[in-house]
Image 1 (cartoon, helix red, strand yellow):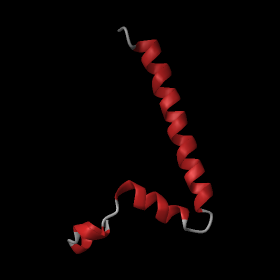
Image 2: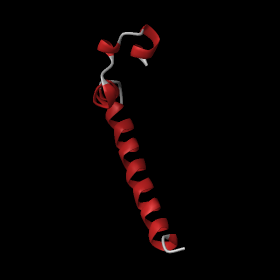
Image 3: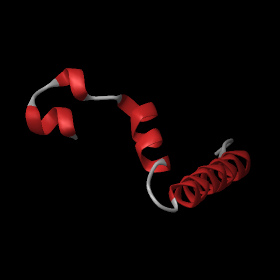
Image 4: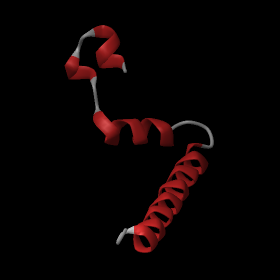
Length: 56
């Protein structure tokens, strides 16, 4: 977002930088854990749906 707002692509850090910045916040580890758990749940959910409806 910083790179888009300032038009300075050198300041962008990608996903890795975003996750590091989030980790540095108070309770950032808790938010990262919730994001990780959500991604795992989403992966399981889509995997189950693909297994069930994949042959339609």
